[in-house]
Length: 236
View 1 (tube, rainbow, N blue to C red):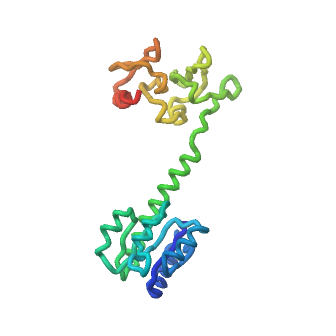
View 2 (cartoon, one colour):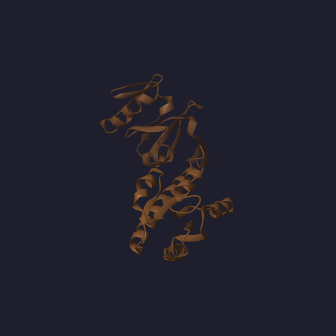
View 3 (cartoon, helix red, strand yellow):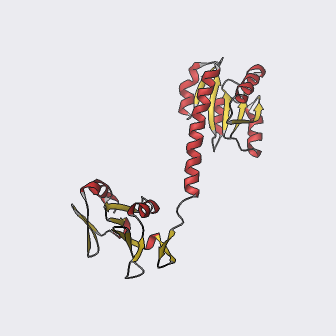
């Protein structure tokens, strides 16, 4: 649910806005206010993720209210005047609705807000669920911990892989497809250079057209992954 607030100084317009919000299943109306000052007080104690905001109000206008915010929720402007549309979009609002607002147009604006809300939530979830910096693999009936920053490169051998690590001269050998290990490695730190090799970018010491060097170890780069390798050269 998206926690929202309605702000409009006209009682009938505010009532209609509340009614429209009640028709949207993913919206929860936290408060309805007839002026921005009252809204400010509520926002200090409540989480507001979306504001339906009238522009022309006595005292503090809707646009001035937006400019007072240090942390802005999503905002949908609702006004009787089209002339403020450009200024509103310059303030990075979700949508701009002109009164009287048809229900289908209102629903469309809410759908935009929902898409943006879900995108932000997904980004939060990805950050919260980021790789902890290690994973475990099965080795001789035991689970062996592998730290991501310890991996130099991974070598595929049919149904097995060798994980070459800096803390041990002997690689860790485990039964696992290359695709599975690739999905566990963060793409900003590791790069696939060949069907049989994934390397840690931080351990690469040199790159040639068809090979990558990790100190004196030379690993082949296949045509399939050459562009990806070339793309990182500016970051090494």
